[in-house]
Length: 466
Image 1 (tube, one colour):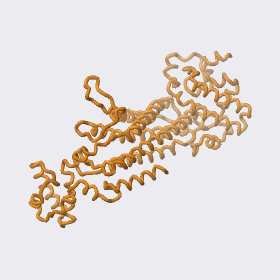
Image 2 (tube, rainbow, N blue to C red):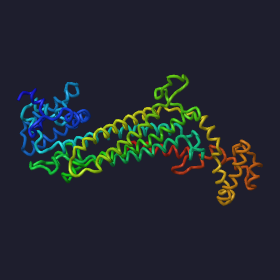
Image 3 (cartoon, rainbow, N blue to C red):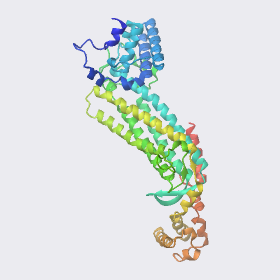
Image 4 (cartoon, helix red, strand yellow):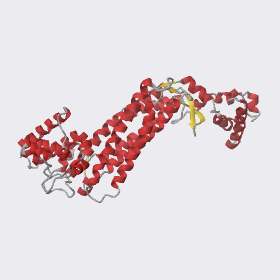
């Protein structure tokens, strides 16, 4: 058979008496999207060939021919010289077919002791492991940006909100470190997921293992896997690791979406807390004054996309009997798009954070509105004057009602006015009614006091260097 003829035939076509319908061939092929795993497929094949040589199935010359051939294929792919064939269905058969064209019968020996079932399961794990490491680096870069911003704005006062209503004054740095803590949990989830991704299924073959004397531990060592799968049926059919990664991604995107919502609000004319760099915004086609926060808006929207991929993968797996089924071909597109979406969103945020400008005068004035020091007055009455908290709560409620009626903040009321609500109030009350006094009073680990923010920044820096 000539090389040209070989390329026109499927490597698995001998069983069939008629050609695959052209539509079915295209409908069932995955090469259009799984070609992105070419590096991992070649990496896995080289390790498999080395293992076959170690156990005496291939000789040293055959191994070298395979390594050289796969190296040339990878170079050709990266040079854009490879035309992918739908007839060969997927990345695995495309590479094997091309290898056989290059080195002859030795290329056909490469598949000894394995199946496409365990081969694709290995490729996906190798691919996802590589992507997890890239995502981890982007997460760290975003965390570094938040820490830098928190340190810069450790003394910057802004209103803290509950129900999107002014609650108590906080520092901007403290607010940024709240996002840092969320991302720390995301990092932990991702690292934990990586442990289960890093399990080698190769050697499970189609579903029952193989009769050849393979050395799976040697293959795992070559590929950097921590462990091997211990049941061949589960090895080829398990996609829990993809679901777990997408669940991590959905949680991360939920966090980024919440952060995006704040950035959109804060950059609006109604808040004006921050200024987003122009390069992360766009204008309007009709309204020349507009500066639209497109990056955070788009990240907020992309969270739904990842949620959908998680549901897609869960639904994909929920009715599958053991072992491998063609359904599993549908695992790749949602997984790949989740990876791309997460990497893009993290990159945008990591680039944006260091350039974010805080309008300190605006956030300070905003913190003065809405009686943000009301709780400080209640605490003052309890701590300094011995009132029960419920009684102090009532006193402050009356004072706030008066402030609403007169348009005065608590700190703007005279001592006489405050004493009309509680005669025990003395002039030292004004020390706790200032915004600076309020934030400084939260001087404990986890609190918003500027010195606590700086201490938290140092802890965060130490965490990021480990």
